[in-house]
Length: 267
Image (tube, rainbow, N blue to C red; front, side, top):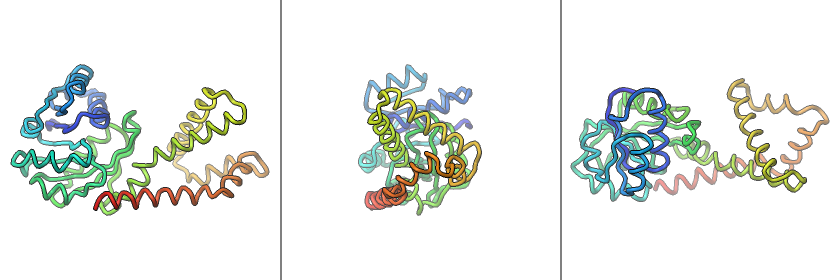
């Protein structure tokens, strides 16, 4: 990360994850980071845990920053930016992680260059995936900087903004689908007589290991599935029962519903 001064408007979990990831890189960045949050307890936590500057004054944080990360709830954005009218300049980069807000809506409120990012929950353990896109005024160098910033909390992909609703359905909501699958495996194992704590551990580690195997081998998941499905074996029997229950169709329907809801929220 370069020497840009970065201000976080909002000091919640995602902002903390990014701050922690940046500082974990071994580069002394404390003097380049400031978090603005109205809650005194959050400011105290961020100061004490990471040694960064904090403030309750959004305007002061913005005026001193090269990059501003908008990390507040989407429904708070209009009011927050209205209160900052005249504070942003065209030399600044505004990076929004607010779900559902298009770059055009933000560009209409501030003169800054705008980029949009859709991170996901595993960023909290630095295993997330973030989709990055630029607005009408952002540059290639801006997107390089944003990608570097979010690489601190996981993988980064660049996509056109028109695909952000699909990204929301895939990676944004995806952890929820995985948690539901883990929960279902755990519940089924308990019903079969396995002790709950053991069932949970085994379900989680099975999903973690399978995902890591898919990532490391970079093979088609269908091929990996075939490899573990011996003819006449237990896995094939289980997969056949899931298919009969509409497993793939249910996943597709869920993703489409999430995409459609993301589109509704963006209107």
